[in-house]
Image 1 (cartoon, rainbow, N blue to C red):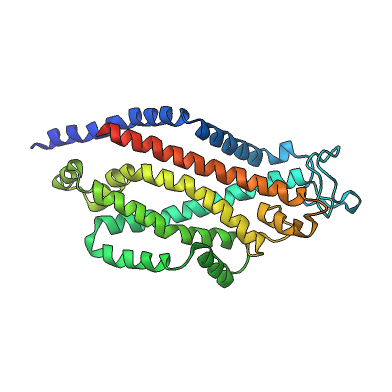
Image 2: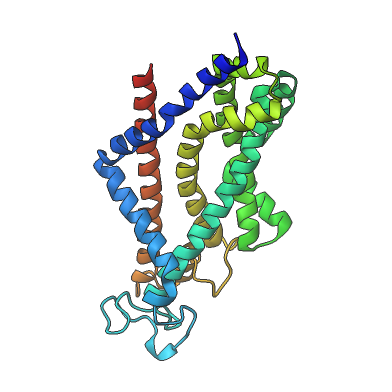
Length: 298
C-alpha cells in the first residue's frame, strides 16, 4: 500500500468527528435532566465570574448589629450569619472557590492520570509497574488519602487541590488505559506505525484524541466529587479557613446556630447539593449520549 493511499484513508476516521460531536450534542439536549444540570452549571459559572458586579456587599464584612437576620430581610434576602455577614454574597463568592478548586483538582488529576494511562496502555513493559502503583493508591479510601495528604502538607485550599488531584489520578489512569488498549489495535494505528510515525506522535495525535469521550465523562463527574470533597474537607477544618466564604466552611460555622438560624447551614447545603447534582446528571447524560453514538457507529 502506497504512502499516499494510507494517508488518504487515515483522515476518513477523523472526518466523522465533527458530525459525531453534533449528534452527541443533539442526544444530550434531548435529556431534560441534562438541560436542568447545564442550566445550574451555567448559573454557577455566571455568578462566579460576575460576583463583584451582582454582589454589592463584601462577603467578609461583619456587622454584629445585623447578626442572624432571617431570609427575606431587606438588603439581605438570604439573611445574615452570626457575624452579620451577608449570606448571599458568601454563597456567590463560595461558588467561585468551588469552581476554582474543582477545575484545578480535576485538571491536575487528568494530567497525571492521562499520562500514566497512555504509558500503561501503550507499553506492555510499563503496564505492570504502573498498574501496581495505581492498585496501591486504590488501597486507600479517597477521602482518607486526601486527609493524609493535607495532614502532611498543611491546611489550605491549594493543598486541597493537590490532595483531590492525587486522589483522582488512579481512576483516570484506569479509564485511559482501557481505552488505549482497544484503540492501539485499530487499523489506522497500525498504518501509522507502518509509515514510521514515532510512538509519541501516535499517542498524542491519534490515540489520545480517540480517548477523549471517556475522559470528558470522567472529568464532568469528577467535578462533582471534587466540589463535594472540598466542602467535606473544609467542614472538617482541613480546607478553607475562616473567614473564607467556602460552602463547607459555612456549614461548619453554622452548626451551633442550626436551631436558631437554620438558614446558615441549609442555604450552603442546598448550593452544594444542586451543583453536585448538576455535574452528576450532566456526566450521566454525556455517557449515555456517547454510548449511543458508539453503538450506532457499530
